[in-house]
Image 1: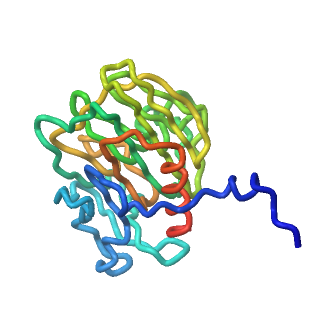
Image 2: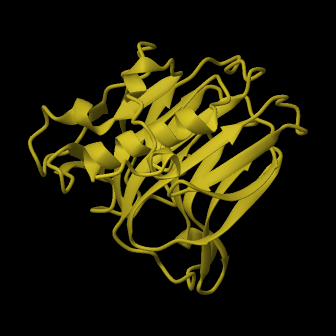
Length: 247
């Protein structure tokens, strides 16, 4: 049998293990595997090596298993469920850019009749110069989109939030002063870009915001960010790893 054309192989990204990269914070669902399925997750260990473990903030995040049997954290069982973790008060040096990743499953998407309160924040930092990764950002009734927010403004992807398993990756190229470009990738596809300005500090959040609102109606398998602007090869490799691991 003749070998497949090079282009066929080229379209299949090589998997990149997140443990081979440096992270400022890294929340891998498998690190809560010691919590029995269905039990409350009071602590989600940070596996970046920086000791920024996420603690229970509100609601009732619980351990679940993905379709492949890997542990993940369910924030959708109780309204307002969320966790928090510590960041340096002076902020993370973002001069080299930032790369943000989430892999998640939405079990429901409100229709927007509740206004901005129907939004769902996956991962964020509700302080000046912070960031927000939206699985579902309210625009109008029946119009909730995947989005990313920093002091540079909200960047909408144009992709409607829908139930199911997804990845949201955001690569922020330097400089970090409101002129560098942040590129959004939804399920591996380029889906929007805009300027960014962020220096995450003080209190990081997983699911929701600082008032325990806008929680994720679903599950998070991975959330993390590093001080770097990842190449397309690295980004695609991480996304492939997430799909292979959690389904």
